[in-house]
Image (cartoon, rainbow, N blue to C red; front, side, top):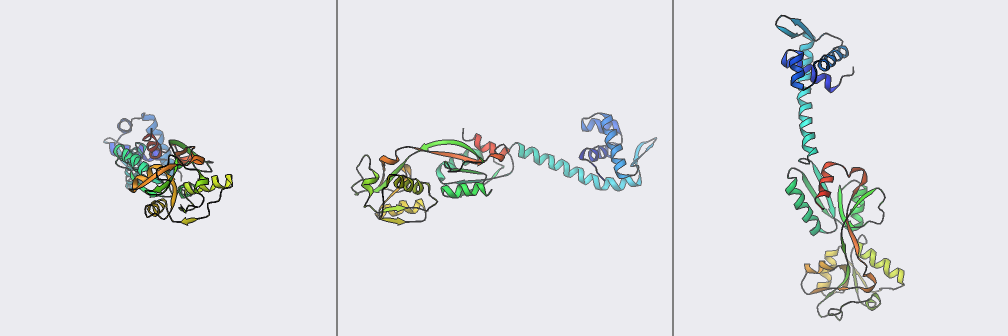
Length: 286
């Protein structure tokens, strides 16, 4: 047996309104459409569902049994339609966000929730490479991050340009400098964050390209830990300039060989960019 939503809705409307013309008016379709859908439904069932009497249409025993089921199905169709309309307007749903920078993500999330209060949000603070992995594995819908190495299959939305600096503590010889070179950093203890960190990847790529070896290294688990290590005067780190605002007595010094800005982007898998909730989040970043 093969029946359609329209056949069930037409049959239910005729049952409720006890006539084809009233059912058509209630559904906003032509009477012939209702008649055809009910006829096809009867053919699929293999039984007559209505009898014509002077008082109007009445259900046959088979029709009564079928209507007991289709009435509930019809209610579910209506509920589904309502939910679909809510999601189409981005009033319901779940949006999973990952970012390697909380401040930017929170700004956009606040703007999004003001416009779409019915959508639930989850947020993961993740490193650069971890953000990319979460997108690839479909564990995040949108990631805010430095531009990924592999952009294949991703939709990329540019957000802002940023700069890496040498983060130094007050009293360090570099603290009052206008700039510092990587060569001058040789001999300093360099605090490096997770291998998934974009700043670490960029620093190591540049020093390798220039043949510079920064041999004194302290490894920590995150950018925040690197900042705290600098604050405790354990060494210097390479990080995004305004991260220094998180701790007093620190200053970001421009690095000559890393003077080119890098691009912060919002990214999602290209095949879902037009989903209403995801598209709405991107619109909040205009």
